[in-house]
Length: 139
Image 1 (cartoon, helix red, strand yellow):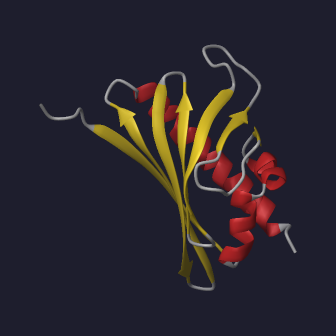
Image 2 (spheres, rainbow, N blue to C red):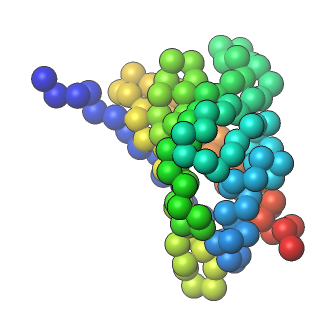
């Protein structure tokens, strides 16, 4: 029996900043809060944490996560569990021109999770803009 097909969402943005600055915004809880959500994140493989937002209709505002990969200034991955949905988020940073190509990949959306996929697509594009704003103000 084959596993049901899943979809992957990819959002990429080239930022005119070094990967070290972007890495800080991806891994320091106080900075993550500024562009994503309240959290108790630590860049330690196996660390269980949560993102917390204001609850809205059909969502309690909590995302349960676990750090899967930490490769400083190049790759960060964590599980993303919310409302019975289990996906994996992978951030990769690669040199590009005079800055860094930031790639966010969220995989594991089931065929029956179109609304979740579309919501994530909208959300991550917004979050990516917020991330760039946080990175731009770092010294």
